Length: 500
Ligand code: ZN
Image (cartoon, rainbow, N blue to C red; front, side, top):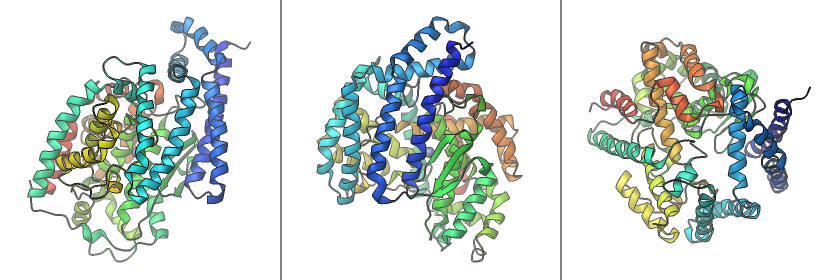
């Protein structure tokens, strides 16, 4: 007999099939689809997205949810989590009048292309009216969704369920003070790594091989994925057996491709590690953006920029790079991949100063949403914050307020999840260090399977069945983001490296 549960499961699977098509189309657009087909492709994506929206918010979905919620306590845990997740999405979209949602989709699609032009021409005025409208609509949506203390909480919640500005404020304040202190101490140390030693030509073909090797080394399963070239690296999941990674190459600097592939590879290990029982549901996903980012930062920074990892693997890397690297010893390489200095562009920042870029954006976007800051004053406010936090300021808006696409896409509330990712990663590192009886010896022995196994069981497997802070609590015993593990990790690493 067909039960409501099985019909619901089928209905949800149907939505996932549309999502898979959408993901494949998005992947294709960013990995070499011909330029002349882009416009028609965008229309096709629009049509399928409409279809997904209709399915997620349909009367039928509403009936399923009401029925299943009426006997919620009798549901198995997977179905219960699925009902919760579908309810969240259902309410989120149903609370916005359909015509306002459409207007927002059209507005942000236009704004993204205007933003690109504005950035290329270094012309904030061109983008300004679009951003003003996006901010106004964002505030309108926050009212529909509702919040307890401030509208920004309503925007943060979909990215990081259960985390509030009240959790983030003290965390960021503490980290900000520590980061500024550390960056100053490093600048004053007079000790600089010879990063220039790593700048030398490596062909794209060689780099591609190195990236495949790096992915295999950390345990990425190529029988369930692939690696492709792109302009802005990303990881995308089509289905549990098809988890893709992309990277970009700088033929003068191996670090660009190597660390972006370790980053995206970290995201991919998460996706490949989720319980396959969750396939065909929206629970086959990360618990939140912050938890997802913790996995990429873990493999990129905690592992990929550690001395222990390269003690084991630098020889292999050097062999793969061919001749011309004999004069670069382990210590030079290790110092060169840990060059800490303030810079203007977020995506190129090192692991310490990176968070300063986030604090800047968090303060500004929150002020925009609360109405304390007007869009016309944004470029000036950006420069001022940049001077205050990084000690430098952009001479062009293209390298300042116009550098990120997020605000053009209407993604307010997204930025803090990057720093939460760094924070969670350090919390996981400490728990792992404790459970394994020392992480460094395990890395130095190349026993990455043990590290991956720990992450898989404690972080990856539950997918989106658990809220981010429940994942954190389950893995570390601490149920909130905390700054201390990150600060301790930095001290342990940078005090000896920069002889502070
Ligand atoms: Zn990432």
